[in-house]
Length: 442
Image (cartoon, rainbow, N blue to C red; front, side, top):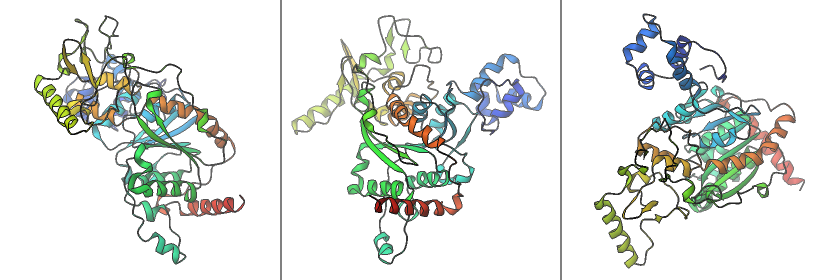
């Protein structure tokens, strides 16, 4: 893939087809355009000329439906999901030059919205950092895994060096660390669940901070932010910010909206004012009758099961059970398992059984605008939004990071990049020396 994103560039149909076929199978391209595989084959062979009427759809496929105009700094998006972190940083002037996501359904949603005009890899554990473009900011919502500290204290007692390779190999954080070590970006943002700080009795978080601060040599700041400041959902996540140089960054610069969001802000409107989205059509909302599609209302059997389950645990003194919400409320945390029964967030309906949120409402609950496309099934969409980030929360963090990113970028040439095969040993050793020297001067 060429790696150069220029949505204003002019292409004819044959050029766009050739570009798309670098990342799409013939069948995938045919399905996206609503034509047969044999039609695409004839276009490619030159037997039939692709009509110019297909150019807008081809351009949309290649460049995506999302426009990112920022050119101030380059980002790479690891464990990208559906691009929520990327979207937040785009609002602060960033543009992605590389992405990595292993799940085929998330990749489909990602590509639909951001296109094929940039490099995208699958499993990051199989990607050599030498093959990743240079960048200014590393973004990663990495999964949490326990780290083994066995042997570390013994190595130190023998005077032998240890590093993040020893302590984190086999975990997905290791791949974030090796990319940061190799690319030496001006900054990074890592996102994870709130419980990261207490995971494995706090050992996991200590290893992460030690690797980022003492071995990679970054100034690190972290904070748990509740998404309900930005969307009507209680959702606490930890954000770890790092800078290659010293800054006066402070979390006190975070600004929250003055008005507290409520669910009425994201629920489909049944008063005739619900916007019609051509890309959704009537998939989620019945515009003719101004109501949410009936399939989202719980069946009598499921509703009875959830009520019995809640009553059983209330009798035992437990708080387990469904969460019933009304438009004036804030919801519980949307989870990736929402597709199973929707029990954590059930919308009350007067005179009827409660209903699940629709995928479009879930998108809004995570802060995605209505022009965000949902090309996958409801089940996959629920999983994707349940695993995503609160976009406006990330955008606010990106806003307060921006001046520090730009200052570090302007301070001079970046350190010489090192190969992935060397595991950035030279960069790590230098970072350790700087960290020790800094500690001694305090």
